[in-house]
Image (cartoon, rainbow over the protein chains, first blue to last red):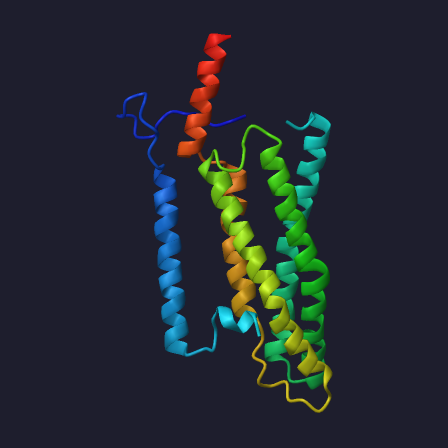
Length: 56
Length: 171
C-alpha cells in the first residue's frame, strides 16, 4: 500500500535520503505564483481583506 | 493499524464528507449569484441568510468530518501522516481550508445579521465569492492528490521505511 522508497532522481547513494519529487517542486511553484497573484489583485483592487477581518 | 472493516467504514465516511464539502461549496457559490445579481431585495436578503445556514450546518460539519476521518485514515494505515508528500500536503491544505472556514464564520454571520434587518442596506455587502472560489481552488489540490497518490517519501517516511527494512531483514 505504501509507495516506493526509491529516489525519483535515481543518482543518489542508497544511504542518502530521497530528494523532493518534481511534482512537489512544481506544486510549490504553483502555490507561490497563486499567492503572489492573489496579493497583487488585492493590492490593485484595494479590497479590505486580511486575516484581521476574520477575527472581528 | 485499523481492522479492514473499520478502515472501509472510515474511508466511506471520509469520501462522503469530502464530496459533501465540495457540494456545499458549490451551493454556497450558487447563493452568491442572487446575492450579487438579483434585483429583488427579498431574494438578496434570503440569499445572505441561507449562506449563513449553509456555512453553519453543512460546510463546517462536513469539513470537520472530512478532516477528522482523513487523519484517522492516515494514522490507522501504513500511509501515515508525514511519510508521503501527498498525504502531508493534503493534510496541510485541508487544515488551512478548515481554519479559514471557521474564522470566516463571523464575517458570514455579520452579513446575515445585516440581511435580516429590514431597514439595513444590503447593496454594499458585496457577496462572498472570493472565499468560496478560493476554497474550491485550494481543495482541488488534495482532491487530485488523494486520487492520483503521486510517489514520494518524505525524509521521515524514508527513515521509517529503512528501519522497517532493517527490522524485517533481521527477523
